[in-house]
Length: 287
Image (tube, rainbow, N blue to C red; front, side, top):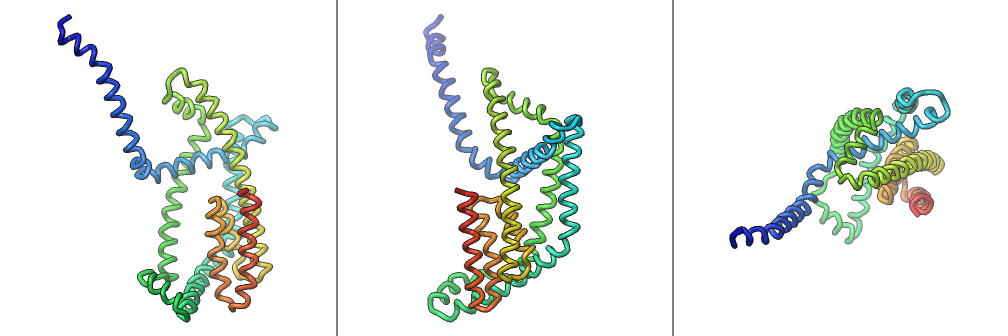
């Protein structure tokens, strides 16, 4: 072996290691940007996974306690979920829709009253001056909501189709995911996926129960304190409860703005139960 060949052979492992480290560094640098660009795809994937998990959660009692095969149990589960959403929309859809538009109208009126009251003092005028470029109107909100609703419907269709495939053949996609890891990690990966699936089912079941309880209690509380549109505000609270911590605060904003459209005295009396509701749900469910 010549000296040049020996020198190349001795430096070879070092070059390979340097190349591997360089690839890892580039991958780590690009990964955040890639995740940011694929955020919509990741959200659709998570939504499909949650919907497929929901189908399996509903189908589990039929598969465990009845002679139905897995495919039939999944079909019954899907029909039950679709039927539940359809029945809810048929019974409460028109009323919730009308109340929702009333909430939007009152939110616009509440924002106007807030601006009028802020203009009566120096600190309020300073805030208005800083927010001068921000214009909020009910028409703009309706257009924005319509655009979001169209996008949400399109995403819901994609999520539903993807969830059907995931729910029908979970083992196929699970085995494909496991193949991404080295062979000596396959058993550990299967065990980890079992734990994740079990935790995800329990979390989703608890989250759904929590959302239903919060939605019902919020609607009843809003009705008891005399605010208009209790069903719409309850539905907003139920959906926002899916987001921990920030969700209850965001759900309280429409209720507070609706309360502002009343007199200032009644607003103070009605804001107290709303703030107490936010605090109590944080204590009960997010401890």
